[in-house]
Image 1 (cartoon, rainbow, N blue to C red):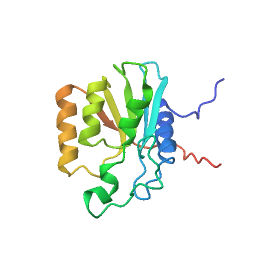
Image 2: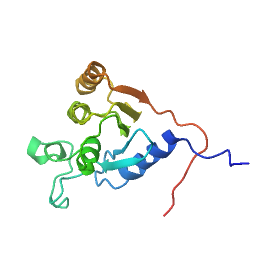
Image 3: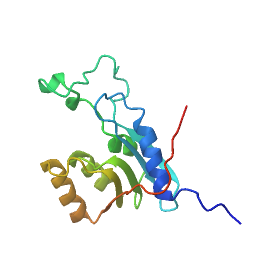
Image 4: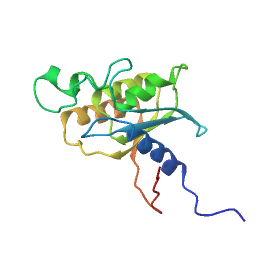
Amino acid sequence: MKRQDYISWDQYFMGIALLSAERSKDNNTQVGACVVDENNKILSVGYNGMPAGCDDDKMPWEREGGFLETKYAYVCHAELNAILNYGKGSLKNAKIYVSLFPCNECTKAIIQSGIREVVYLSDKYADTEGTQASKFMLKMAGVKTRQFIPEGRELVVKV
């Protein structure tokens, strides 16, 4: 008889997204993403961080101040990094698991890449205009969204 307490695909892929978020050097918000195909094969992962080739020790990580003095002018979001990290062509019909509902800029990349479903953990910016724009575009483009609701046992990764 096979083991019955194994984790679901949703738990597995959201776990990969959350583990990826742990690579982020942002001291306020760590976001991770995991892109999978229709056969539950991982295609790519990403987390929020500075662009490749930019020394993140010399980049601003602040949230407040002039635009060029904050992280907002420079950080690549997890979803965009996961899409760009794929590099093998189309992500048509893929699914993206992300720890935070995508911003409007990442939503554009999600739609353009052909991803058909967004599974998110947190929607803490639901009331912002950016998230409202994201939801409007995703619905218009026919991209399915659903919130991942953690259930079952707690998994702890120790290293």
